[in-house]
Image 1 (tube, rainbow, N blue to C red):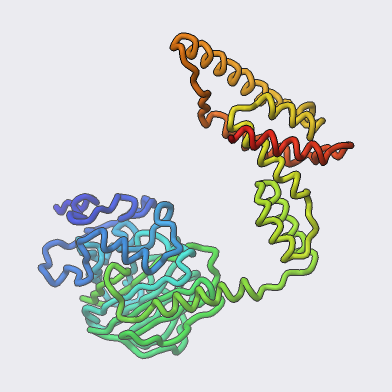
Image 2: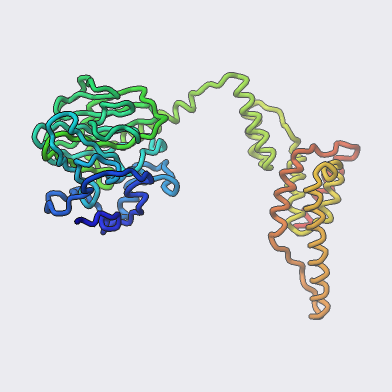
Length: 420
């Protein structure tokens, strides 16, 4: 009996069980791996250095957040038909079924779906042996597609077949597409999420687009299928360099995305709405210089006076410097209704004022005991309050009562004193 636990399958790789087998608890019958077939059943694409693998994937797919997502990197022993054997490195697959009719077909999916943030995803398959008849398919399939079929025969399944060169897309009837492939050929399969196209390569040459306007709502998995005795494939998911220059396709997709964004023309009312939303956010966060430049570029008028923005920033500085009492006086002066309307903000300010009073008393007692004066130091405890005040007060317009000009000058003077 073979020990086919995940730990035994991966003696050299730092995979977790979820990475290798996926999160599904699919049940398969038969032996998952075939450890006694000698060196011929070991992958030529196996890369032992985990750091190299990770770096290769990051170069290929720079927009994927690898802390939250993973890309396909091996075959899933629990998501395969039972007449397929998988090597211990999870990269090589051999057919061991009866191989008499299409009912004997068998397929396997990769360990995880393809992240759409890849932009363009690609993998290559070496035909290690075409077996008896070379009834093999390489492509993509959705999670629930029957694995007792070659890829392309069922809904949300796509496959390029080696015996006739036809492409199958969710149908048992294929269309003429490319050349046949046999032992020694390297066949690549790629999906472009930007253009919603599937394409294939043979020995480093792009055969062309096989299917356009594919639905990308469902998760798609790399898939290979076989049907006759001794067919065998080896797989490069990107852990080793590809024969085909996929980087050119990835860069082309990035350019297309950027150009489509730049050339996008929104209806006038939507463009105005978006510009106003951005302007309000800049004002809310206090980015006065960026706000001024943005409004100038978009032709918007100031939603809040520049002096008011500076006042709120200076008010935050007073709080951070520990001069909460002065800050409260200024809030009441410039925003006379804010404290009454926002009880939470009022409580926070009064609480921080009390803390500062206790701190000053404590410092005075310490100075008296030591016979020397100590400068009051303040921690960053009031910074969250300053941020709250800065954002909450932005919802209220400053008082425009008589003498507001002198008040602004007074606020700037107090703020600068607080930082001297």
